[in-house]
Length: 306
Image (tube, rainbow, N blue to C red; front, side, top):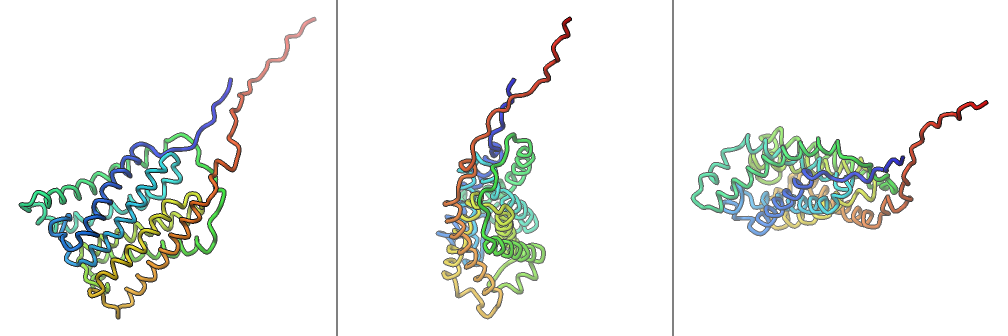
């Protein structure tokens, strides 16, 4: 009798479906907010009065597009796709709460005579209602997925990991401030925000911080690919967004300089992380595959013969 060995743990079908659906949604919003930045009255789910805020949101959506795309392509190995899940779950849950708490700005698009504007509203509500539910069920299903996770072969450099911890925790703290105290955040931010945009911006900071902190927690170069691609996309595009609308920014406010330092740091970590991830050895290629183990059965002693 032979016992079969267990293969590598894969991403379950529901999480994969939520990642693919999320990729389509965030890519669509990235295109709108980046190329139709000043037309959110028609081509977004609610009207964003500040073009800078819209462009900043667009850069976050682009980073999310890179994260979800790379996670979907790596679905056959759960630990490599997994870094996308905690941040995505936090993002969709917080934005759903912010939407319900600040529903008034959405009413104009709900009752707009333009069919495109109506579609934008229902797309937003549908995505941010379905995704938290689907990911919750998917994460429960993932706990029952058979298989084993590949071992860590190459750990991250200590300096990279420490920077990721600092950046991740810092982003979560800033995001929590924006989300929990939006009226206070509006007063101290370096460009105009509303209560809704403050909470959505806070949701993005919390999600980004979780992705960074998870990368530091994993401490594995091969598993770094999904977060690193997101970092490398976020930093440069958000810096471009800020350069597009510098007239909205109060550069005498220290907050903007901390924000810019965060983006420069994210860019550096992202590009170096991509290099490490692409050059990392595959964990299963560095060891021989396990062989089937023969089950041992107790052999009865020979019968006594006179």
